[in-house]
Length: 209
Image 1 (cartoon, rainbow, N blue to C red):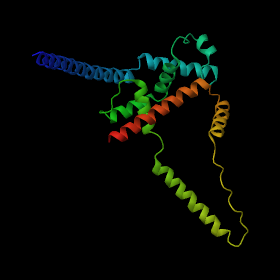
Image 2 (image 1 turned 180 degrees about the vertical axis):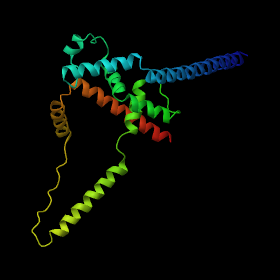
Image 3 (image 1 turned 30 degrees about the vertical axis):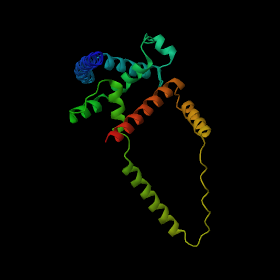
């Protein structure tokens, strides 16, 4: 008798938890739908916080003749309390606004729960395609071959094997590139994190597919 009651109680608990789970799933879907609507509306709205912030930062960069907002500049223009990533996303939206709006209009099924998610997908889709890169390499190889044929009979140096870079080499080259282009370590780390997250998202999408 006791075992039967225990099983009944367990069944009731499982049933109650299942009902809660379904209710929360419904609430989650509604929340995601609202977030997608909110993000899309924000992107199209020229009076949105993100657009106006991006416009302000663009004007500051132009007036100060610089590429990045330093801590000093953020403090000077009163935007130091705004999260750095938020400022970066806002500037990206303002700088790419017309293209992003056109892209969303042409892809009505593409809707996003946040600006970072939209930015990652847009940036990924607008990277140079592999086919274009391969075609450029093919053209280069044809030109090289043509050059070799025109130099028949002439002495030719053997191509040197390209040294494989180590992690330290790549890190050193990156540091030099950051210094040359005036990019701060913090800005680079944010961009690197975004790219890694984008790669991870696409790997997961490939696995699902």
